[in-house]
Image 1 (spheres, helix red, strand yellow):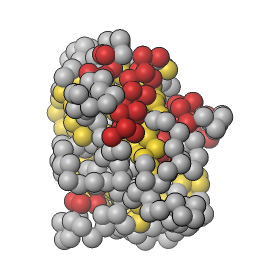
Image 2 (tube, helix red, strand yellow; image 1 turned 180 degrees about the vertical axis):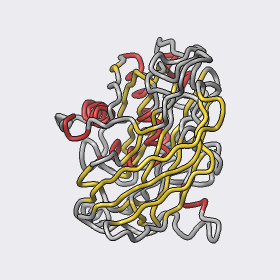
Image 3 (spheres, one colour; image 1 turned 180 degrees about the horizontal axis):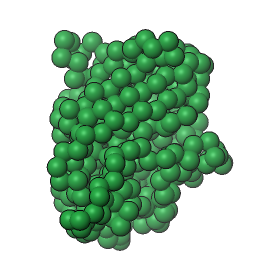
Length: 364
């Protein structure tokens, strides 16, 4: 992990003792060696299923019931997103909540955000996310983590978790087949020179999404999609713009469109096309696992400019996929559409008079 690249969000995935920044990789996304019963059939005489999109539940999943409590609402938000996508919801695990809260406190005390702790520092409970989950008394076959920090108070109970889901490398962690989760928050904070902190830990890999199904976000038929996103996660998808890797980093760009595979899924020869209703192509930065190892099971395209408000966009993705039960690269072609909502103004944080300069929106 490049600790010099201070950006808004980081994520780490650890299976057994291994952890990696970004898209949630690990030594084995299928630690048990089992194949999902809903995946491709394993017998040599069976007919492979065509690769297609997982059907989204969409608006029928409703909206999360928010209480104003950051922890409860972060969990409700995460589960609502999974329900919209047709995925099973997370089980709330007390020990994992404890591990997340311990690390959120560590980050608050250090006034720095990341995934690794240093023995001897205040609040130390374990070097890596998997160590801290174990220290809290929970045994699991996989651990992933997302972490966020904002100078001063959160402006809403879902500000941090919503921004993490918007960031495509982090979104992949919400979507992966871990089945348990816990969230933790640092102490209440209104000082703009201190970080308010949020940590989410995800545990217990169980193969559920079929190998031949892909998860799209925004999902097919989704409405009120944000037209724009500030490209400030690490690893940063816009840093792969070869003509000028710094040009779009930290800038307001279009909302990221992602395609996630299950299990040991790997993409190749990916071509993304995003077009408006008139058929005009939207230039975007494509990133997948052939671009960077951080994009495990992930393909994305991030438009270079904000999308138009209240506009329907069509997405077409072609390429090839391998997975546990798809050992040979198999061609696929998927299509879907979504509609943006109103453009949201990007505004600076409003600080009380005399409160000093806020920490920049930097999360690591």
